[in-house]
Image 1 (cartoon, rainbow, N blue to C red):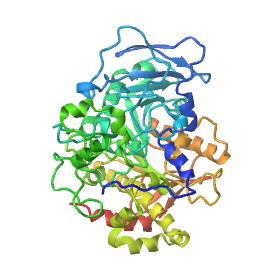
Image 2: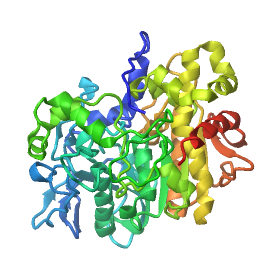
Image 3: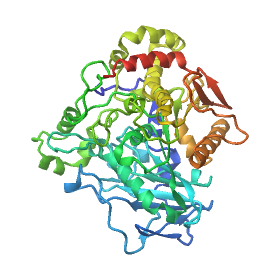
Image 4: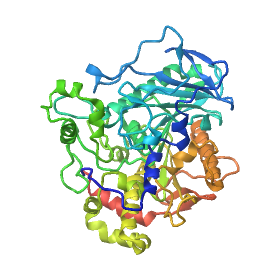
Length: 523
């Protein structure tokens, strides 16, 4: 399904804040991004990649920011796989974040410096030394694959005894492109950037106190989808040992390049799958009317190119970096055999106005199941059809794939765990219909700035669960409710609200109808 224009309704300006959570995980992070470090002796690490001088926080967490993990992907290296830089021969200043990757300007007040030279990563550690061997948690930021950065408050999790890594990766058409003039075998360059960062972790993280044999990848929204993609990408095998996908969209229809395998699944509206080459050519045409040759593409102004994006950017099934849609590969048992945790929020549909998908386009997706869905979502429909459609959109895009993927882990002899966050932000309209998209990601990295006590408490409990999973491959926490691994027969989700409870049949009826709709796309 082509991403179409859909504008926020009047009076829905509160949704802008929701969308921007995916761009910058916590509102305070952008403000911190370029603050000078504390006036303390700079901690220094010597790793395989070189020597880096970081900064020490007042909480004892050491931060090393703006470490280059790949050379600048510019000029002839635009739309090429990332290349590792030469090892440092002199000490490098790693006290400030590097520039974010080129992206549209969504929020001028929180704008970060951007550049096409943006392949930097960041490390937060409680202590240095190769004897520490702490679990490593690698965060992949969200933002619809068109915006965001690795500039997070990594210390929020590092305080819990883990080493945290984040990175920038190429965004928009600079990161996801299958143009006929390029004649490339791969299309997901942004995904290959994340793979390169994971290779850097394997080579260097021991010097920062991390265990390269205990790496957990995690991310929300586009970052959650990146986790799903890494689970099925041949290039990523062996680079991580656990995975957490927060609001990934593994069952959403993706564009396909000419090298994608056959038979192809149907498109979202049951027509032919979308051509990635056509999508790329149309996007380039918005930036320039010139003939689209390889030479023209590589000299085209990158900012003009990313500014042409409408809605979210979708990754591409290219048969190489992404062999097929992740949901289908999971159902075939072709994913990595590692412990897997996934889930989403009770009002994921809050992001629909920014997705580029219109109401009419989504009705075509629902097709003959629309009548059954009206019944399943009767409470929302009683309020308005708009609420029914947005809730259905969120469940289809984010919660259905979570259930499918957790259920499919048994195919590779591993366990999956499902979660469902249902705590509405009380500082907003009391009629808020649930927890919005990516809200839990903000709580994970919140550094006790959230005014609402319930939200602060939830953030602390989420950090406990996430760190336990990274440490042990199981999200159980002493003194907290037991969280059973997922089984379709009982359909249990861990529901996070004012308290935590494993509950069966949370949204079973709704997802059963949506799964029936999804399975009609299968080849």
